[in-house]
Length: 231
Image (cartoon, rainbow, N blue to C red; front, side, top):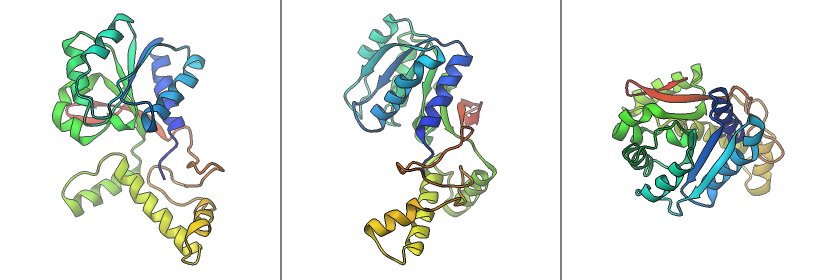
């Protein structure tokens, strides 16, 4: 039940366009998976927002922590902003090294940037980070309160809520399939319409299996006073 990342990348690109960030460098950890998928979405839609991709660096290691060479190469291109596709293992290392090497431009990213581990480790460096993530709806606030009451900690945003919705969707599909599995279950899930979700009030699926995601589902976020906030 994850919202469609196409909508999330559009939010990033619109943010860049609104702030006249015309030349953007891309740095990603790997050619593959989510890293490549979101990079491709960014590149495919950049031009219609008046954005030029001035460099596109593949680090080649999903667990990388040393970005000095890539940062130096990127800095030469004089970008207005950098779009990163990282994980919590790498995010703070990159931001620290970018600051040390004088790459002082806005850092754009996806919801993967909004993780609690980075917030705990380097909140002071996250004020220059701007990432798209699902809007924190009233349903999410209620979920977060209930989660903290049950487990004593805030949920990982946004993945805990989307995982919760996904399990509920699967349970509904199992019920509607008559406890069948395989193709029967897949078809039952695909046929679900207007299922009440946390980030998307009415979850339905398109022919490719993506959650049909309204354009206002995503918003840009950053960090202020040690907390993730919606911009």
